[in-house]
Length: 70
Image 1: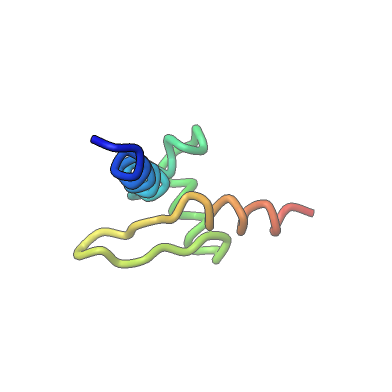
Image 2: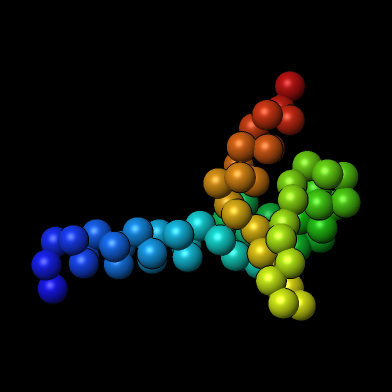
């Protein structure tokens, strides 16, 4: 494997790590799934449908939550 291939693999792994479902997002914020559902209902965070599940972009959720902070 050369350096270019390693960088692509690493970028793909990082992208996968930065996305997840409600349970993954709850673990990311050390909170419960119900809190994630409340934030979603309040419009503090957004998710995308991926089949039957919601998928969250952790970086986007971080940005939205930080911008909401007063």
